[in-house]
Image (cartoon, rainbow, N blue to C red; front, side, top):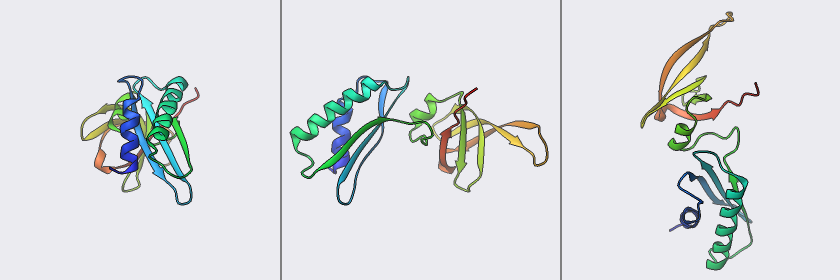
Length: 156
């Protein structure tokens, strides 16, 4: 089992509850290894949860001596502007405004309405060139066509 998989196993055992999940684990670096764990939750993640996971995983990494050399270690929550990585993150963000970039480089912004196993449905905001009026068009986009999806943050 590679290092990232071992760290994932440790982190999963130390999650605070069923609503908290791991988005990504990275263990990489040339001169100095950097270990990064990104958490999210169905209802968000608190700083206390991040701290708890960080302490528990860090302690176990040291006890098991999985990493022999010096390394940096960070546990964080999925940040604003970070692309959605998991199906569970899409479900969590239903009814929020998203920006979807397809693999063919077309981009659509709209409200995330439905998340299926193979696709999402958004109410895309379509604006014709030279016109001010925005038309809302329901659009189904298969996950296989999505390059990235980011939540559009509104400060209204």
